[in-house]
Amino acid sequence: MKLEEAKQRIESAIEQYGRQAANAIELVINEVRSDQGAAAVNDLIDEFDLELLYNIPPLESDYSNS
Image (tube, rainbow, N blue to C red):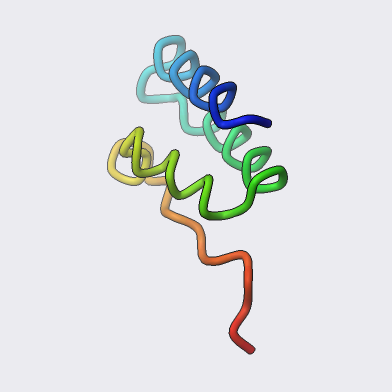
């Protein structure tokens, strides 16, 4: 999923579901992570303040340090 589409879907979920949008947003987040990685997800989380509003924390890096 491209970031522009993800942003539109997140905005739509917030408009449609308000404070109950977390489940719909998490579906978008999972798809973005699969397609674009954790950095792109974290950008969306920051842009929409999802951690504060929906308790959706930033993701760890896609790469492990082990």
